Image (cartoon, rainbow, N blue to C red; front, side):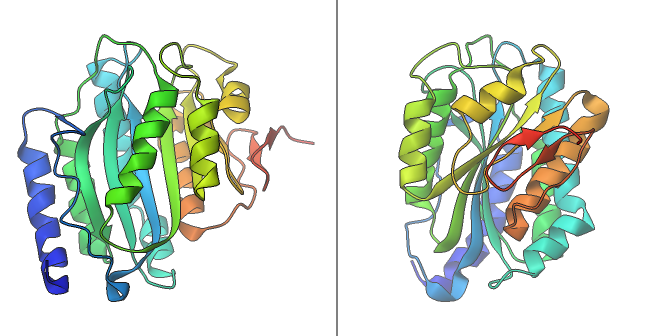
Length: 263
């Protein structure tokens, strides 16, 4: 595929994602155009948004997660962070996951290089047909399948990050530590936002079993009121490529991926 064609196809993919009536499994989903890693379309960050849709998530919760992510991409902080990069662009794919091997594409790989790109992506997130499932929570499988998505991105990326959002622990499939270590060995970072509406110990669980890579961190949302802030802070940190401490509700993340309370 010619280089100039890649950018023109982005809008068509996003429109198709917004209109589809069901989430596409990885085996059937058009994740990208044929891979043509053109240097003039390089991105500062390739980001997988992996959103929990397991049994602990209601349809209302799923829609709330999608709206929270959409609001973040509309925030000037995110747009400024994207523009400040060396390439002034990032690539994002949104997926939902639950039990083993259930990861499905909500929005395929999309290059964001302008406020209009960010707005289109946000609008698509708001209208995409994600849905909760009566299923287990297989974090290991989600990481494994998210890692494979980086093999299909058509633009070279300076950094690669998997961004997990969940309110549960892994209770099915492979242990998450194996896929986490494999991803980190490939240079892929893993961060997370945990929603503490069921288990107040999830933060430590994700620190020990899920996140990985230099500067990896966990953001905590203790309620719906703090969820949007947690998503915004997480994305701003990831896109800017920093591991600076950002306090949210008395929690601070340090550069080695651990969190501490106020001194």
